[in-house]
Image (cartoon, rainbow, N blue to C red; front, side):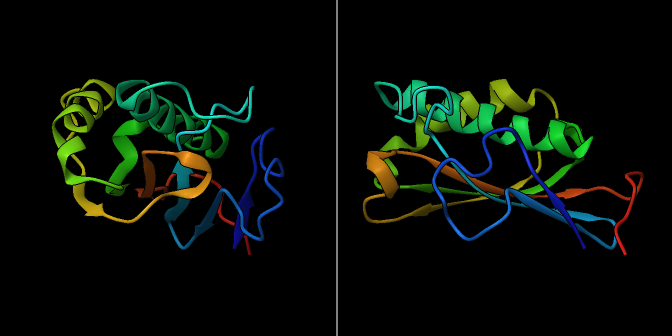
Length: 130
């Protein structure tokens, strides 16, 4: 297994890796809607959806992967009423690529966030750890 780190990896002190590459698959931990520069979520659902997706992009980039490599996303929202706005931002982020997805209604998310996204991506062309 190969741990994937970003320059923001240790900000919250959680016991996890932003992503792990194993056997041709990249497993990306939940990316909250926290702005890594400020340590706080931006105002509003739309901005938070964009931020969580931007954070996902940061991890993909650190792994040498692209959005088109994403196979599946799990999106966590504290209210299914947010689905429409989330779907618009998700479509803008992925463009014509449509990974499999599930949207999971939850209770409150960490740090007052309104969005958390985890993903699985194809990474067969990336260097593999041993």
